[in-house]
Length: 386
Image 1 (tube, helix red, strand yellow):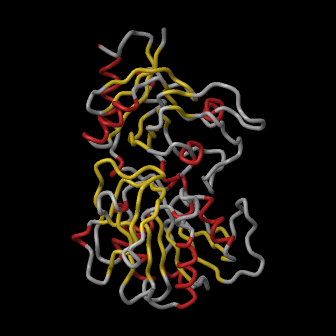
Image 2 (cartoon, one colour; image 1 turned 30 degrees about the vertical axis):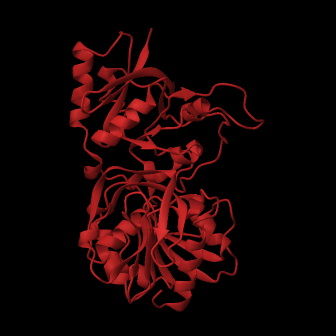
Image 3 (cartoon, one colour; image 1 turned 180 degrees about the horizontal axis):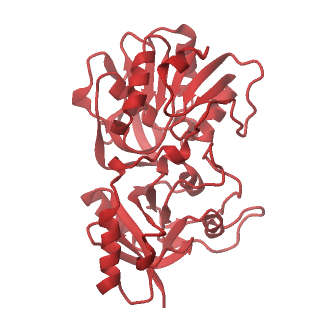
């Protein structure tokens, strides 16, 4: 009987059954790569939002909650602003795929992933896999099909060769496929753009989620969406009130152009950032980022506000973080992670620059982080320090 195998770059093999788009045979890997960085996500729900989040571009998501798919999918729900028909995540890995009845109007997770050509595997020991990734670190992995009892011989050699040749996430340009290539004024999302906006933000698109634009529109903020390669001159001549750097996938150390653009705008406009945007601001202020062992992926990460002392729950998806030791004195921690004390947000001591590492629009609390957008807007109005 044909089985599907998940193979990690260290040679670890997990067997199960495929769903969604069927994985290729080992000899087909050159033409149909099913490779990505395997990361685990601790959310109990939200699998459709996770699959469609551009920040997961190039990654295979291991869901730690054992039973996935029980409420189905909305056929047209997609966080990917640029290509609603495209799913950024490479694959979803689950212990048990729900295949029972669904609420009216919903389609199954299997059908959703088939439609959007996303690989899947079910029936594997996700607890063991998660512990492995936690102890050894996130790594590249591949999904393959085989009709033998286990991958071995030529098939295993072909699989490992494909994994070895595949670049790490630190060496991949993952933004090009999830970012606009031309300026887009008031992109269409679920909420209409404001007809008489309070302000207009210059939003640089590194893979922005629709829900972030929704939150800005809710607050009467218009959006001009710029490509990730935009220059500071274009931002400063756009007439926008503030610069907003979006979330997105990949290693911020590769984005030297975006860092330079941000440095040239800081001090001239208020600058805000979320997730990858926070990391770009870290570099722009003179700090550095480093790759985390297994990252923060989930909807249950506690974050402490350094100014109020309050702690709240956040949704997160990042594999890189600000290096604390590299931060200059003027870049002050705004939030820290209550689990590992990593930086979760920055403010500049003298200039209107704010950033958060988590996703305030995801609202796991359900509205714990939404006030972040209000703070951004109030700082934009003042054009001064926090």
